[in-house]
Length: 233
Figure 1: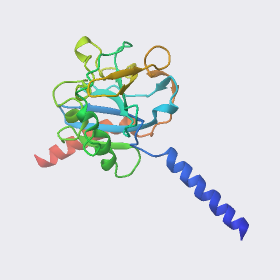
Figure 2 (figure 1 turned 180 degrees about the vertical axis):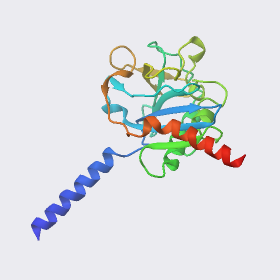
Figure 3 (figure 1 turned 135 degrees about the vertical axis):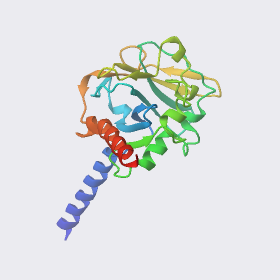
């Protein structure tokens, strides 16, 4: 009986650990977004805990004309030191940050992009397909449906060339993830990362496992859109 109990305990422990490893849309995870505001499709993907990614991560992305990619995350639980925010830029230079304009970045947690993706992840595989026209989409919340790469105003450096998104005219664009801590209504402090001031480089080394069908996901969505239009005509 004790042996059976021990085995059951081990199985339960293994399940709990695997569930923790495969948990998606959690605070502190890195989120990848690929969207095209013209065609109206958007894909969110949870890449896992930022703290376990080291100094670089390689995320294979297929070139898709008209599409854009962004990376962001935040520690949703505020502590005595404030909230940590993460977002990638297209240049390895520290972007300016406007600390008083990040409400949509978190938006009370319930209305944030992260929660929207979590609720839309029906198969719980870390991938959510949605529409840019929805009020809680990345395009609506983070870009305000107009200004690309601003992260709801938190990234105040997009006008200076440090864009928070990259055009997917070619595969695997290199981006740089920065971490900031907001401690007051306007006070934001850069948390130095590895290499220079950025938290990690997104692209060059350290390949990570990704769902096999993800690279075909965007083309599949476009195909479904085409089929729907054909039959609705």
